[in-house]
Structures are given as structure tokens and as C-alpha cells.
Length: 107
Image 1 (spheres, rainbow, N blue to C red):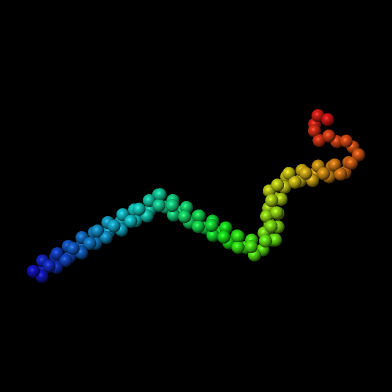
Image 2 (tube, rainbow, N blue to C red):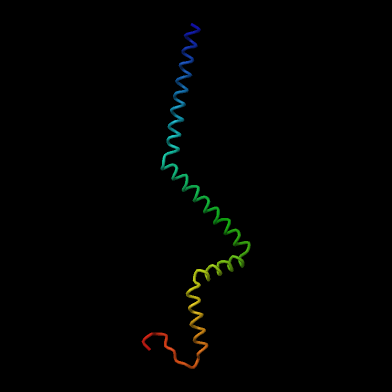
């Protein structure tokens, strides 16, 4: 009886191990599915962006003048060509005050 009892116990342990292996395999399969990986990446990127925004907002509250100056400089950098053209036209207009220069090509 002792051998039969040991055999049944071993068979039960083997069945439990098989079920645990199949459960772990199905969990791993679900974990590495493309949809799950995509969702993990989206969650990570979203969390990183939101954390960066929170840090930026905290820094802006600590130094509002510096942030305003930096944003103003960035805005001037983005619109440098239109601003340069505006100042060029003003320079020409202020340099030649007595001539009548038309701003259109047809006179």
C-alpha cells in the first residue's frame, strides 16, 4: 500500500504541476500578445508625459519670469522670418520718410 499511496501522491503532484505550468504558459502568452505590449507602451509613454508636464508646471510656478522669457524667446525663434521681414519694412520706411513707396507691385 505504501508504494501505491506514494504513486498516487506523485501523480497528484504531477497533475498539479501540469496545471500550474499550463496556467503560467497561458499567462505568459497573454502578457506577450501584441495588444498587451502596445497597451503597456502606451501606458508608459502617457505616464512619462504626464509626469513631465507636472514637473514643468511645478518649475513654472517656481520661476514664472524665467519660463515666460524662455517661451518668448522660443516664440521669437519660431517666427523669426516674419519678424525679420517686419523690421526690414519698418527700417526702409523710417529710412526714406519723404519718398512715396507703394507696398504693392502695381504702383
